[in-house]
Image (cartoon, rainbow, N blue to C red; front, side):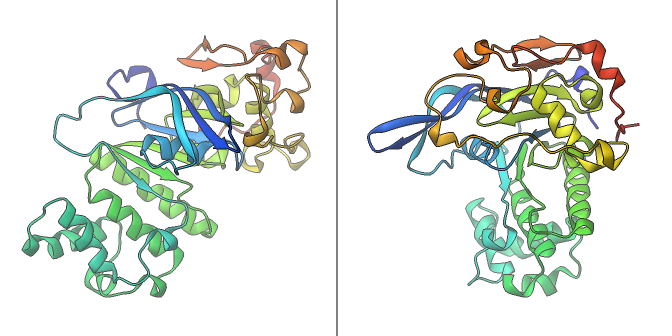
Length: 331
């Protein structure tokens, strides 16, 4: 993995991103105050419960927000890739739905490569190369197939190969293992990591699986109810995470606790983004440390040791973290 302490070459900077929903003459801030930097070749995992706004953030990065939503504040700043490559490509949650059901796999590669102005005679050879890179061989067999003839894992490999065709500097992988069995999930994530390193791509991995995030990223960004609450290097996360939500996610992940007796669910329920009317700490109703201050205003971001940052009025004391009996997946 990339050492985040040595990475300074930014590829994408997200500054104070705010996404609003327009409904019945009113607007609701679904996403607010997102600040995140992704360096060239770096893997960043965006972690949080389903419904926390991770996919919306990814869609904003790709400029694919649906019509009812718009980015009303902040900025996305792309730094030049220097080689003429597109800035980003995306792998979506449902691999089968991401493919065109009425076109063979080979035709879908031809569609993508044609938009990139790849000469007609070179497209078939390029499609074979791409499928072989995602371990689909013999490639000609799969190029003749229809999407419904492939398993979910193979459909995801095809989606990944189509994304790689664009030779992008950043791969956005939105829950790329949804609906796959545990073995296939591991294979897909390992494959993405190998391809990222071989191509020196950056990766934004969207997931609700904290264990997978720690294994397959350089940094972890924790999102709760449309707010980015903590960012830390992956190798330091288990011992240095101080936001109560980050600690709750750790305790709720079976692979990260020493015994099942230490396993705890995240308290309360995730608030609905469309029903939040004003800026505040959105975790306060679920937090044992909450005070009236948490209801009055959202906390500012402060830098923490190890190059991270934290948004919390009452974070866990740093000296208390070493007593937690957790299994370190980076040991």
